[in-house]
Image (cartoon, rainbow, N blue to C red; front, side, top):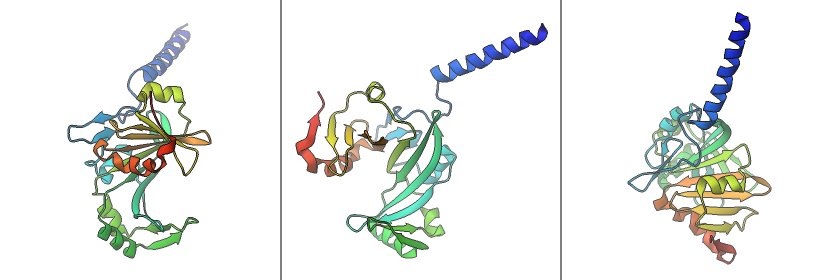
Amino acid sequence: MTFLKVLAFSIIAVIAGVLLSTTMNPPTSLGFPWQIEKQTDGTIKVFQINLGHTTLGEAEKLLKEDATLTLFSPKQGNAVIEAYFNELFIGGLKAKMVLTFEVASDEVEGMFERGIRISTLGSGTRKVTLHSDDEARMRLKPVSSLTYLPSINLQVELIEKRFGTPAEKVKDNMGEAVHWLYPELGLDIALNSEAKEVLQYISPKDFSKITEPLKNISPTTNKSE
């Protein structure tokens, strides 16, 4: 009889734990992708990463994961340095994440020259593995943008419920994606029926860096009702 009482109590405790975990705060302190905090200086904070302030090293501690740093130099356009997180668990969801930075062009050129391995992708973009000294310096740099790639598809209904109606919807001329733009949140959600959603966060004051390339396709741009 005592054993049955203990078993019943254990089952109730497990059920209560499950209910609490789904109705209260997320399993980690990093929050959910729709929990975007606007800061007084025009930046935003998401997953506890304050864009423009939180360094890569600090972000790695928050995410409890080390990033892979790579410099990508396209045939046309500016080179970019990305910090890639292959497997994260945030708010109970598995995801990948990419962080980028504002780095002066001459500094990028120096890192390219010091790169320890260079390969060329099919697109012609050169992929550079950074020298360890440059990696250490990059971990002191503040993050300027964050791209979140969830492992599950986010339904349109859920996106509208959590993020609200976008200010604008723009079709991507490079593919099938439609960009839902939230300039006040510094958020671009790319929806594609053939692939999973991509959420890109940037400080609202810098949102033109996302919209300017898309404005070249204004004939297919739709304002939300």
